[in-house]
Length: 74
Image (tube, rainbow, N blue to C red; front, side, top):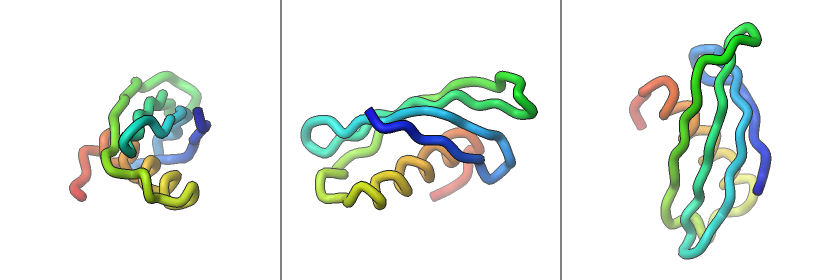
């Protein structure tokens, strides 16, 4: 598993992890906090990521986490 953390586009902090599994499927989970207070958890998956570099995979997971939390398009 790989640890990931950051801030969503609406300023909510998150910490989570992700794992690249078989056939390029990435499964991720994240816990969200604002001002240190628990806001919620989300999880998700990305498909066909087997050819992504580690840096690109990290960017894709962070984008998916932000989109899942904020409901943004993309």
